[in-house]
Length: 486
Ligand code: HEM
Image (cartoon, rainbow, N blue to C red):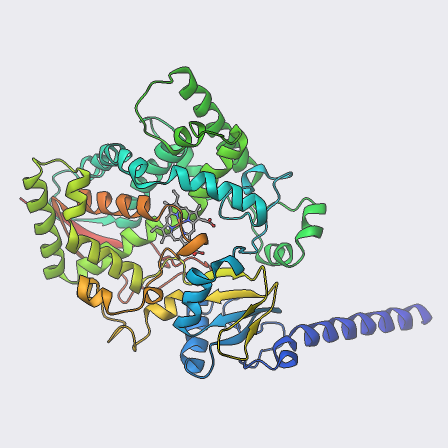
């Protein structure tokens, strides 16, 4: 009896401590006197997101729309973790561009000793990120990116082969574009040749293994403890596979050194002070992690929108055909430069379906907002709600409408730079933005040149997003009717 009594008292004590800790965590913004949305117990301001009832971009958009104009930022809680949610484009501009030196960290978990491939540009912070960024910036210069175009074009021809001269048939567009993007990643990031990339593709789908959100959350909150316990973010067999492939490809390349430039691995190994091979393999994995999902999402959403607006689709195809004709049928760097309307179409896709719905920063120094009483404290995590900004009716009239005209030169120049940030920007912006734009454009040329797309009985209209993912993805594969055009 006494034992039961003691057990009950201990449970009650533990619950009281837990309750007090939750209350203290969720009282952070109140104690700092910062305007904030009242948090729900345990869930903070993301109730419904964890259970998959709504997408995180909707939670952010609600708060952005509700508080914009009242303060430069509001306090926000993702479960118990407090974030600053930037509302004012001037502040966004300061964080991303002018005062980026105060916000060089992202605050993601990485464990280089236990999980070497997590030592990539996306996940690292501090001096390790700084030196890696300097080396990577040399790799991703425009001249190098241009040299990779022939490889992209060669890979894109498989799209044409795959589609063939089809009469009307229903195709799984998500699978079609994923095959292209996986081939490009396997080839340019990991150096794999033209062989079948089925095994590579399989591991790209399984790299998260037995991922548990609550474990990732704890690792983010208590990285030192997580490292001590050797918490691993990714499935070990997948990491072993990617590391083996990258290392063997680098050895292979060194054996046949004088080959023309085709891969990012080559560029890293040829640098003046190259990284060691495992560090280079980590970068290849980081590219896969950061790039594959957004590339797949953007190309599939783009075809979905064009299928619904045949006149925009015809205009894009006409531009592609005319430009190719002027360049003797070849997809050259000049040809890509000329595809102005196609680029507008891709930008409008990135606006309406922003793959990374927010940018993440951590203040590495205290930041006093100029001419105001507000302060972002050192260590505060900052969310920039890009998807909400991209659908702000004060910046984009009738924001839910797909209209590539918004990206005509003049219209674009009339908006502040912080109004369109699908690749982020500044010091921690997407290092491969130019490469990704090239890849999207080359893919779009191959997809549209000789084929027409239209909705079919299996097309979900309006599109539904997968609420369980932070990246914006369709809830189920996008399917469309495809037919050849003369
Ligand atoms: C449609 C395609 C893509 C989109 C929309 C996209 C978007 C982004 C965004 C929003 C960020 C965070 C930027 C910030 O915090 O300011 C980022 C970072 C990054 N992206 Fe991309 N990305 C794409 C493709 C790629 C590709 C293809 C690669 C690699 C080949 C890549 C490599 C990276 C890396 C390494 C970072 C981390 C940079 C750093 O922290 O220094 N991305 N990307």
